[in-house]
Image (spheres, rainbow, N blue to C red):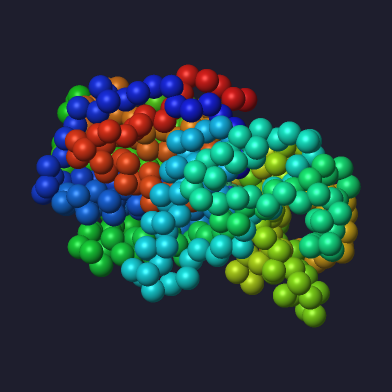
Length: 396
Ligand SMILES: Cc1cc2nc3c(=O)[nH]c(=O)nc-3n(C[C@H](O)[C@H](O)[C@H](O)COP(=O)(O)OP(=O)(O)OC[C@H]3O[C@@H](n4cnc5c(N)ncnc54)[C@H](O)[C@@H]3O)c2cc1C
């Protein structure tokens, strides 16, 4: 979740020769945060869009299917992602009005910094100012005063970003698909079975026996992209096992814990982050260290006892009152990692009208609306956007 990767290196203007016209037929495969929003925006640009998903938007296997996801703009010196999140934030708010549901909770984001200088946060401060807001600096003593339940051991300071918080992920993902259908789109629950042989693909078979024809096929299949397209560029996406835990807070203290902002360990010393209120499901702690390779179809989703021990040790230090809090729920979700943490949006080199969108790499959810808009602009020839996110730099 804490990617500090370099800005995109590859300008893709030349790679996006496709210009969809109003009325062009498009099939989007994958109704997660990326595919759902791309489908909605392509439809708003006048395309006739069919959205297909094997298990449904926000299903329990996909990356967008957990209860909540953090929304924050802080990306170090990476102006593009900061700006993209600002746009996404506004679009999430618009979306809430359109669907009549509260999905975004502006709790603020508390960055816990071990070092005096933390590039991930410090280098974003000028962008925040440009957007008219100041982060609040909190020394350890101010932190203890403001949040008495927070252990400050090892911390140099914290920054509180007043804009940011969390999104209801599964519910938001479903709401995007519902809105897409309400605005005239077709949604089909079926598995896409691509078996392309020619350069120009005319049709796509589905597991329900249907065959869909279209001018363009956009695969936004999250952790499945790598196995659907085992050669470049799909092979760039790898899938790792990631865990989140929900702990119960004492009944009489719910408000005390739920009033905490989202918190994030800023310099990767601990690699934990949390969503205290988490929609009533408990005090959520996420582990951002890349886990082992994961099969999103077949692997079980039970927590690993060693990972839980690490989380409890961390709680003992940072939130001592919750050290022995009961574990209410846990989730195992796939990260769909690109090599450097940048998003992937590219035309498949083997097929003129097949595009791939993915590589959310543990931080993509919040960007869904703005990314979908960029993708739709690129594919309808509006251009002027940095459409290919995959850089040459490997981060890890
Ligand atoms: C534990 C965890 C914590 C995270 N924390 C954050 C966070 O705090 N903030 C943030 O912004 N992001 C976060 N992320 C990242 C974010 O959740 C993902 O980047 C984002 O949800 C990816 O969306 P997607 O649409 O690419 O993939 P998915 O949500 O996985 O959607 C892909 C869809 O494709 C469908 N599909 C696959 N193959 C086929 C096929 N052949 N036919 C039809 N359908 C198919 C699947 O059913 C699925 O619904 C986190 C991720 C994880 C796992």
